[in-house]
Image (cartoon, rainbow, N blue to C red; front, top):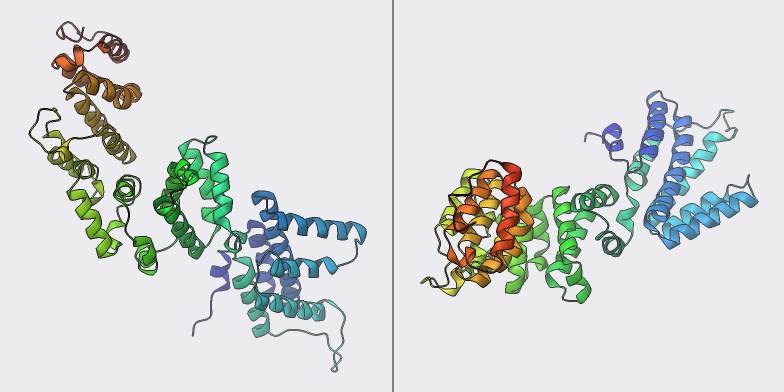
Length: 437
């Protein structure tokens, strides 16, 4: 059997400092300086454990880790030459923090014995210094690599509660992009693929099956965390959903809409790997709800502009939004779902299409009340993003619909639109749009 490459394995070392120190270990090993390699290996192992505990204390406010660091610092101040703090460190890393298993603790103790033999002038019967052989040295190096160095401290603690607390604190302080960057660098990139899967399972259940007030208050940012995790995942989705069947238990109909707009549309590789019973449930729910039909982008074989245009023409642009239409109640688009559709199109950088969706929805308003609601909820926040062509479509549509230009708010809203158009084109001819003016 081909031996594991120490060089390749070392690329997964968690701490950058340890990664640099490890190069010295390998250098000694490759130059057949096995005594030096073992001495350095023990030193780096103790250092790495200390760095892991410090990371938990400083970056994640772990109280147990802080207590261990305080105890070690006090010991070193009182007895600068005493090395018993090393024993405290490994023992607490195992017993208190569970950073290492009992087997790993024993392996470190064995490494310490070999380190003492290599570092101290112990003369053997043959009147020679002790020297470990190549096989033992390699075995010790590989052990510490796999059991200590490549392990993230976050893999060993209750990260879910820490992240939930952090989300609560950061959600109003960070933009969406800042949020994604922070949680990627602080947590997601620092944990193993197995831990990532545990996190996805936990947050999936929090979003889709937790009904507490706190879960609902943080729903948007918990979903944002899920999507950030999925974007940076180190694991296979097919295997994940195959192993975690309990995540596929039946959702209520309200949550199907959130699953579609917030997860499936942004991660189109999830739907194909879901259990057939859950897929059938999603399909049947969508079939009965026109609003779910118009947002279900994830069904497309590819997310291209051409595919999206065909989808919109079929599901939306050829439909009549008038209250007096002959369509069933399921075929009336609602403000929430139109905004969700537009947000999905923005996510894929189809901003011109998202603006078209919003404008056509607004100019199809069949009542003053609908026009007011759709302008406030859909159009207003997008005015700055409209191109000259989009604004021209908007002005022309208003000019042709008495339910929009005849309402009381038309004077103020049309003035806003006019200002935006003049910013784009100071010479735009408004005179041909009599009803708009």
